[in-house]
Image (cartoon, rainbow, N blue to C red; front, top):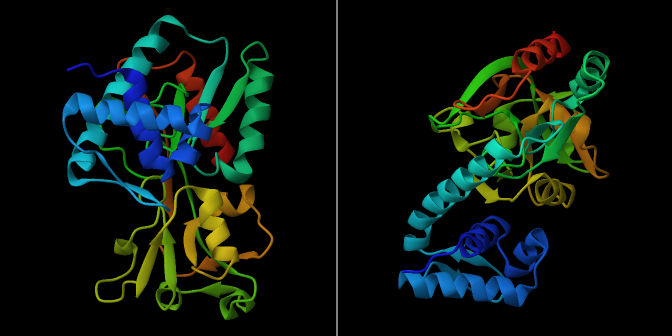
Length: 282
């Protein structure tokens, strides 16, 4: 068996993007190169990992079992590289909206305290917001991480907002309830989003849901009136979009915002970062 890292990277990129074209763009490769890498991995393992159609690509049953292992391998390799090449900056990963309205406050406070160590925010649409992939030293997390390799700490909470098309009747209200949204198709991002059907009471879940892949696709669906959504207030602050109205949700629980890092390799000045982040939310 001759499995190579570039093959695992191609598999994960295609699974995340949903198409070979988008995966190639994210990796900076040609579509043909990504296709060859995935095909070579399938040959090496002797199994089919992806179902291919003219419009979309999805994991097979075997592929769904292989993907978590592939992500773990890539994360460990990235961690190995990071232990010997620490950058002269502190990178904070996020999947959707950094710290929302608190982002600038934290940046200013950090710059005043550490002008020689830039605080850089990096967007990564992965479950660990770039932490597991070696793109970030610390990650902003709004959903639980079920991985003992990472430690987390609470820095604040955020309200949940509904996102609806501006021509939707709900946009004329100042606030809505979860039951109001359940009548529509609800856009979800099961990989990085904070909304699941379990957010609704039993027996009152949405009539239908639609999977999206990242904040931009999520917003595009909502602006077109093809779905509604529920998200953190940070999304509204950092991702305004023509055609999308954000409204308070009166009966939804708040979202806990945490910072996460590698348990066995915390970044320097972590304690100061946590203190400043909590102060920003306070």
